[in-house]
Image (cartoon, rainbow over all chains, first blue to last red; front, side, top):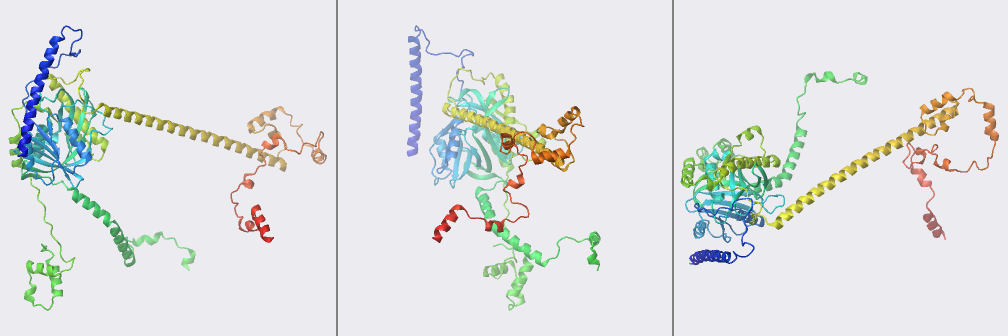
Length: 318
Length: 310
């Protein structure tokens, strides 16, 4: 019930916006007529180029729901915020409670009119997973997000228009394997801003790079400084370690399972174990070494003719 | 618990030894019995090994392809997607070693990929008559705020300043090092001059040399003394032993009474200064122990001793 209410509210708001915008345009036109006689025009056109053409038809109605689960860290939250800032076709939502089932995300997406979902799932307050999904029909992919650097970091000096459409750059190794092909298609549909999207800018000044390295997908975002190919990095940076591809959206049978994937829990356990056994191993080695020294003779092969080289003193002859 | 059948033989022995009283038929045991024995704790560790189930990784190629077909949008133009695929095969061949942990190489690879795709995409967009560069006076909200960009600029500036400062400091340090070297060399040369002078004095005392030229030109090298040699008549310098002795005994003319006091020159003259005599370094072969025992105690100690006596 609540849900439907919300959706109604949202619809109403949308209508309101349309009306209000229409009102403002009419107001400006009236103003323009009034001020035709005055000295300064109400709008100033760019000198060096033709006026920017009006937005054409917005055909590709791709919308991406970008949100997270509760218990997400600040860095992860900033990463999510960066993605929202970079994608004008994204829609936010409130954090989802952990007790809710992932399948409910499909309903949320439907409510929000979204057909793609980027869902940041936080586990144990330290591991970040990213779900990328094609909402009602699937497929969906679960990634482990590693090496996050947000846009707020001061070493990334680039900047771009908010809502400018990016060029997507894929590594050629995306075409080699079927699961990477599927990921490539999913990424292009999620990250490319539709042409003539109302919130987008008419210029193209950044590139997203997806590159496969070490069985992971590395994401970078560059500003196009000069069109001959001079770039500066904008951020964010992150690495996606794919875990599984599911047939459905947030569920369904598994299509692919990454054999190179180790869960962060397993990794941490191994690290802790190695650290814990450091003393035991050293102690054991020491004991073994002592034992070997006492029981065994020389551990190297002795050459029979080796005695030839030993110098004998006169005292030894006697 | 699953128990490996390879370790069966060893396990059988184990069971036999632990339960000899049982009849032989019972000992021809199956996996089941072994498992029972394990549950009872009759099997010791080292005689069996656990089998971990090998994980199978799903790779449903046909399913993946079907899914790809179902989601790919064929009716949508490239302009909607703006995707480029860049071949990095050549680079991979060139750099055989894994560059994941080499930050510079890795980032360079990504940069090149992005560069390549820009070079590919921008002309394509121009052909489609899509504006790519925004005019100078087109102002719109940026992804990063002005405040943030100001911080970035400040950071860059402070970084460049820091590097400049460190460079300067490094140069200064080097200069200092050079200066020290020069100083050391000057000191060495002085020491050398002094040594030579002393040697000549020694020779003179022993009578090997009867010229005192080296005293005249202070710190002059042997070359300058040679030059003076040519001018003087060697006959004139012949010493009169008797006269010398008399001079030594009675003095040689003039006033003597102020000659024994220190003068500026004598004060500055360090010829008879012996470093070995005056150094505080422990002398070789001489133990300091007993001497220190007999040494006179310090003033405060002496006074306190006196006070105690009273």
